[in-house]
Amino acid sequence: MTAPGETALGATGLGEPAPDGTASGVAGPVRVAEHLNQALHGLLAADPGLHLLGEDVTDPYGGAFKITKGLSTAYGDRVRSTPLSEGGIVGVGAGLALAGDRAIVEIMFGDFVALAFDQLLNFASKSTAMYGRPVDLPLVVRCPSGGRRGYGPTHSQSPQKHLVGVPGLSLFELTPFHDAGRLFGHMLSLARPCVLFEDKVLYTRRMCRDGVVDDLFGYELVGDAPGWAVVRADGLTDHDAVVVAPGGLTDRALAAMRELLLEHEVACALLVPAAIYPLDLGPVLPYLASARAICVAEDGTAGGTWGAEVARLLYPALWGSLDRPIALVSGADSIIPSAPHLEREVTVQDTTIRDAVLAALGS
Figure 1 (tube, one colour):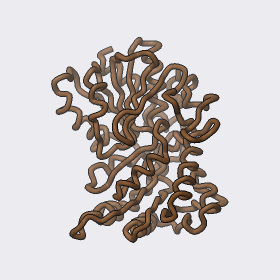
Figure 2 (cartoon, helix red, strand yellow):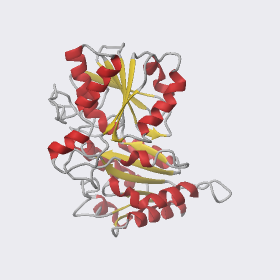
Figure 3 (cartoon, helix red, strand yellow):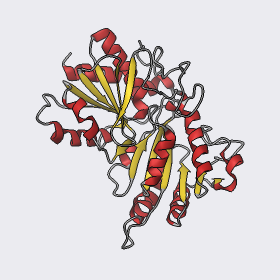
């Protein structure tokens, strides 16, 4: 069981790699960061028209989180380190995409996507539709996001909510269940600008494969690609509550579910989408309709959130079966401190999710 304030999963498999914890097509244990790096290698090898741009992404540094290590050595000037200008990085990436190539660009810390907001809001997202005919713009903007690393107020935020609802802009989040290569392929195939959020702590966890999460939980993918991951305790088909959360919340949601099941006899299902906006709830509505309580969790602060958007979509779809409000879990209304003990007080923990589920069930 995870003690209050802990973020490691202990007994669950996302904390340390299992002996067979591999990603599809990769031999041996692999963590999310390694899997992401291997996916980018594969994409660049397969597509000579693909470019990757970002601050310090070239060797020997290979990016702040080493996601791009080895790429510039292998693929030359299609991988370029840029000046410190997030607006310039996204603008050049969108220009390459408009010119007929494809681009993946990295914002070193997702907080600084705010500096590229004009490029996303007024250039990239509009360029697909404002010239009198449809225009392809295959662009992916990678945003390492989230706290729990002690990086302080301007390097720990989860800015997803600030981009929800922009016409022409699709939002995704990395998960340990969805193959990164296939996810990138899907995003580029949309031929429209996409933002991919990557939780920085998730980088250290292992990828799940073959329907196995750990000793207690299993998962399946449902819906059209990229689809949803549905995570439940092995052998359980009925559940008291459903937690809906993006990929960065996976470790905390599973820790909460483990304690709820073993200590409170509350069975939960966890629903994790790779595509977070626009959101297709159709594949998971049967799981939601049968639950006594629904909890939507996210890392950002409350107010105009992704979770509120999920609830907005769920209420008309489930009005006939809901008997209590949908619970929303968000970070505290605060900047994120650098000191770890203070950071834990304002960021979502496994205990936050556990308590929200119990409150929603009236326990």
